Length: 130
Image 1 (tube, rainbow, N blue to C red):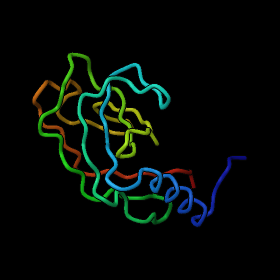
Image 2: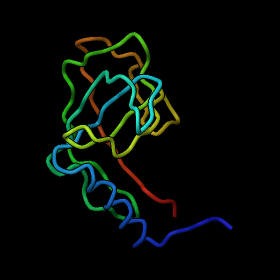
Image 3: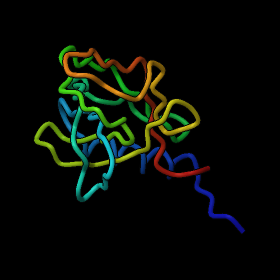
Image 4: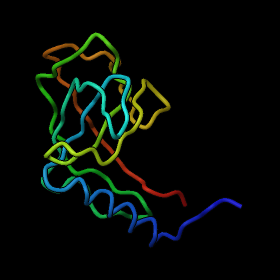
């Protein structure tokens, strides 16, 4: 039997994780290799709003406005991961990045050159499965 969670539990878990990001957190795109404990090289850093996510609904929280990085540091290696972290740099969540069928999908290619603009049009986070 699979583990399932009530909507209240899913909302509580999601809100607890997004609260850890705190005020003015960051969405950072990184190259391989990368783990939560040892994140890879950052190629673009986007800023969350002062309140990063709205309250969870049905177990999913939607990010408020995310400010683009208009001067990415770039790298010849492709982006493979992204982290959501505090404004002080503590990684809270790490996820995979690919062109499609991933946690985060990049639509204009996975290689970020120096000076590129990197933006995120929408982002949701779900901590637990239903």
